[in-house]
Amino acid sequence: MFTNKRKEKGFVLFVVLLFVGIFFIMTVALISFVNAEINMTKHRINSIKAFFLAEAGIARAMAGIRDTGDAGSVPSGFMLAETGVVNNIYLDNINIVIEQPVSLGGNMYQVTAHATVSGSTRAITANLMHNPPSKVFDYAYFLNNWGWFYGSSITANGDVRSNGRFDFRYGPTVEGEIYAAQGIGGGDTVRGKAGTEEDGEYIYQHPDSPSVEMPNLQDLSYYQALADESNSTIKINDTVIVDRVFGDDIGESGNIVLIGTPDAPIEVDGPVVITGDVVIKGTVTGQGTVYSGRNLYVAGNIYYANGPASPRPSSDDPEVIDQWVEDNTTKDVIGFAATENIIFGDYTVMAWPYNWNWLVDNYLFQMGSEDVGEDGIPDTSDAGEGDGAFQEQYEDLDEDGVFDDNYNWSDVFTQDDIRNFYNAPAGTLSFSDIATNQISELNGVFYTNHAMAGWGNSLVFNGAIVSKDESILAYNSITMNFDERLHSRYRYDPNWLIDLKLPVFEGITREAWWEG
View 1 (cartoon, rainbow, N blue to C red):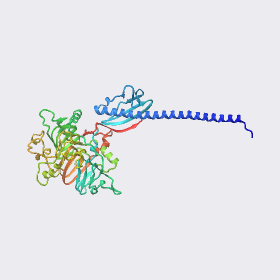
View 2 (cartoon, rainbow, N blue to C red; view 1 turned 90 degrees about the vertical axis):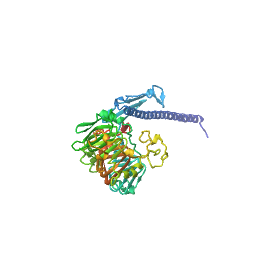
View 3 (tube, rainbow, N blue to C red; view 1 turned 180 degrees about the vertical axis):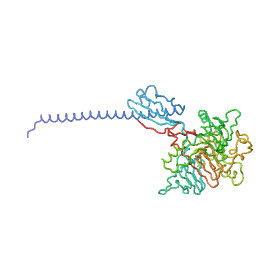
View 4 (tube, rainbow, N blue to C red; view 1 turned 45 degrees about the vertical axis):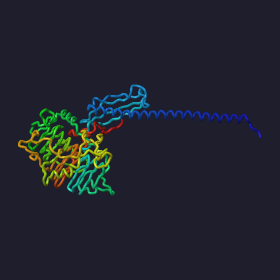
């Protein structure tokens, strides 16, 4: 058999060259692909870096507005450093620009931050609110410690919340949702919307909700500055009774009596600070908040001269609620805030049926101790609770540096004889001359860092109750109607018209953000 060796060698060489060519082409393609992927990865990394640097720009704007209250103080840009490399970012290749914040009205601002890293650019826009009121005002009833509804004739029209445990007995009605951080007791006895079951679950009861921190009123200097800035006043019969701050001038005790009538209501215009005790009752009008540096004494009914036509919207339809709020933006709405306690009724009565000894001994004087442990809530048996030692870092709830024990009579009584109070009616000899336990209607937002306690008869609250502790008792019934104008969904609207200058918690919040 014959074979041509030369042709066979040539064929093998051709095949080898062919495979080498294919390998070369594939290698070049692979290198190009890898380089493209590397470049795309670098671009994605630079884009992510740019996003977080734009976030840093928003954070820088928030800090500027929070610390100064002045949008003009926000820098137009900033450097991480002058040169070099920080966290794999070549500083020579980045640029951060913060646009001048735009006022949206009220305390709302819109700010946009751009960041570029090696050609990759991202932009973030955010709506910011400076010194927003705390969200504790979103509830008809908010307790920082233990919430309790004991009675079949107790009705809450609106959501209720407790940072501690919330207990229910005897079938109260809650036409809203129940939130509690430490569990709900007796939830199966609740009637109304909150008692609605679905597949064996109470769908409007939330027993493991996060805590909502209360603002602190120990230092009223912020609110004094607001009063000065707003040129706020309290007038009766066109006579100025309080001009911005009462009790900071020589000769002013800081204790005052305010009594309004339908013909001569108490006119509140803006936030006003009274450094001592405030005794108040009667007809009020305006929009603003009365701050007390100690106790607020509600001596009788508090009526709005020009209040909403109805205390609540006619249904829980969002459009109906929105319309009710819009219809009542110019109507009376007033806050009452006490650094210490809110006492309503005549605490000097020690006999049936309004026995204050019975009220305080059985309820109020069992509350108030700051020996509550790390979580700041009583009766949770956590670390530090009930040990008699003052862990100031988490047990000084009112931030006054004093280890508070249970409430006692010194927390209830006025700090001076009522006859020495400014504006006390002529002939006043005792607190009983002004106060009554037959209180039936209280309009307004009642806020205290400590206790709200007192007696009433067929008692109706139109507004909100916000306190650390409460000992509220009444004959016949208690009804709470939440004033929807207080809700944060309206306060964060730049077109919202009512600004009571209620207590604030956070210096600034981001209400919305988007990219582009």
